[in-house]
Structure formats: C-alpha cells, structure tokens
Amino acid sequence: MRGASLTMLHQPTPRNDFLFLATETGRVVDALGTAAVIVFDPFLAVAPVLSERGVNVFVIADLLASEDIDPLDTDEDDIRCCS
Image (tube, rainbow, N blue to C red; front, top):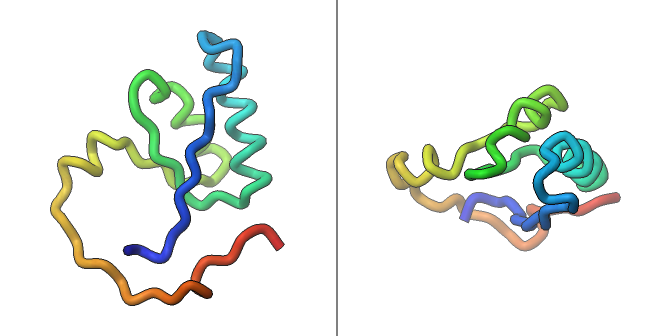
C-alpha cells in the first residue's frame, strides 16, 4: 500500500538486556539497509539507538492513533532488496 517491505525482527537473546537488543537490532538494520523501524512496548528503549543510526523510528501507538491515508500506486518492481 505504501511501496515498502515489512520484515519482523525477532528479539535476540538475552531478552532482558536492552543494550544487547539495540546492538543486534542495529546490525540487522544496517545489513538490510532499513530506512524505518516500527517499535512498541517493551522495546521503546531501543528507539534512540536506532535514531542515532539515522533510521526513522515510529512508535506503533502513534501510528494507530493517526489518520488513515490512501494507498500509493505501486508496482512489484518498486521494492528492491539488498544489492
């Protein structure tokens, strides 16, 4: 609907170490060339680390509270992955 591809990143272990989570998520974001990340509780602590990497960070609660928008006209070739 917006010309984007969504990938769910699994939470790395150990699950209660947010510094580890931020570091590992940052590595995956870099490897994928991610432009934006959607975060939610309990992972909000990772948002500043990703923002420092230049990634656009969106909080799911804010997205759910925003107004609806119309889809964009897209083609299957509009999304490119990892060259």
